[in-house]
Structures are given as structure tokens and as C-alpha cells.
Length: 291
Image 1 (tube, rainbow, N blue to C red):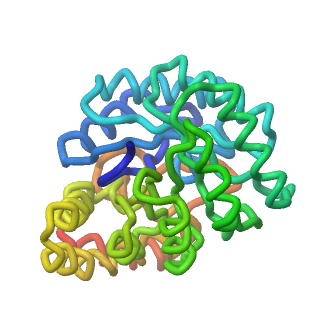
Image 2 (image 1 turned 180 degrees about the vertical axis):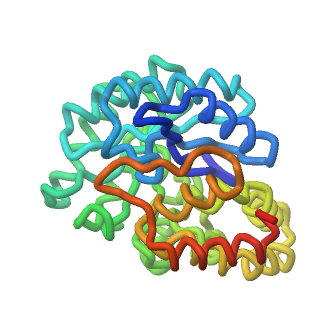
């Protein structure tokens, strides 16, 4: 159901509040440059520091701005099953195409706990659900066996796999088959995962280079692997630059340098040291993203 070039959308702030007009501009920027699916309110969207009301409003704005020109997969995960249920229900009400649910963080549930968490949400909210596995941020790795069990639930349609392991991604693809969408959650692993059966990427880099990320993904999907490989290598240093500090700090600063939106962050995230700002600026210039 979900495939292609997808963006883990940043949430722009202005003076501590959601920058609603800036958010609409970001949606237009993505659609104009070939992004297939827009994913607001994920980790890159600073979901951990959005209030529930802000979370609902961001999803509503993105759905309204997209006007059906791109699918909207709203981040609705939480380490509380009850809160994740509420966020998922609100995303459905807002008109989101699907929901992206991260594995519960901090409380480190067992594999059975993970299964029961996602099963409960899928049972209560009739919306296509994309699982999200990112153990480096959550402290728990959802194993392939658990994903296989969850894939048998009708409205759980795929996983954003960001364990960093191509072997784990391959195992999920082998276990769950073609109808289950396995999407890379790591920009640098997008092409390798697609080569073994993945169906795209939910990208941080696409916030600032959506056309290039889309070109790589679609080149592979259209049977032009050499073109895709060339773009993958061209983008590699930019992907690395997006993680010179904790995501989404570098990508928000890059968006500000490009004049897209303010780079304002919410504590406990804060600006990078000047030397990293200067390094990021050099890299953006090398990609001709800024003058």
C-alpha cells in the first residue's frame, strides 16, 4: 500500500508555536518535488515534545495541505498504548491515509508486549498501520518473528525498518511476503534494502532534497538500478550530514539555511556548535542547496 519516496517531515516552529504557514509550505515543497507519502509527527517531527493538541493540529494541516496529491502517513506512536490509540483515532478522523506507530520507548516491553500493543491498536482503529522499528531511539528491537505475527493482522500493512540491519530487513521480507511493505527507515540503507525487496524509504534527507531522493527511489522502481546506484552514491555524504548531531537538529538547521522554514527546536534539543553549523553549510554548498 505504501511505497516510493516518503519524507519524515520536520515540524516548523515560530516563537515556540507551530508555524502553520511554514508547515503548509513544506508540504507544497514535497509534492512539487515528487514525494509520494508525507509522514508528519514522527521522530523527525519532534513528536516527543508536541502536545496532543499540537499533534492533532499538525496532522490536520498536512492532510488539508496535501489535498490528496500525496498520501499522508501520520506518526501516532507512544510508549502508552492508550495514548497511541487516541493519537491513531484522531489521525483517522483528520483524514490521514495511514498511521506510523513506533515501538513503545523507555519501558522496554517484551516481544509479547509489543505484539499485544500493536494488536490492540489495530483492533480498535480501522486504519492502515505501518509499524516502526528503530531500536537506537527506543531501546527495544522488534524481532522478525514478532513482525511476522503482526503481519497477519489485516490492517497492519508494513514496517519502517530502521534497525540498521539489512539481514533483519531481509528476514522480514522473507517471512511476510510481497503484500507486506518493508520500508527503509535509514537513508543510507534505502537502496540496499530495496535491492532485497524493500519498497522505498521514509527519509530525513528528503526534507531538504526531495527531488533527488525521489529520483533515486523511482529509478530503482522503474528498473534502472544503475541510475539509482549513481544517485545513492551522490547523496551519501548528504545523508551522513543529517546525522552529525541527533536527528532532527541538522536537518532543521539545513532547512533554515535553505530558507524553507525556521530552524527553531524544542528543548531538550538545541542548536549545534558553530563548527558543526559551518561543516553543514559547506556540505549544503557542495550539493548546491545553498549559495
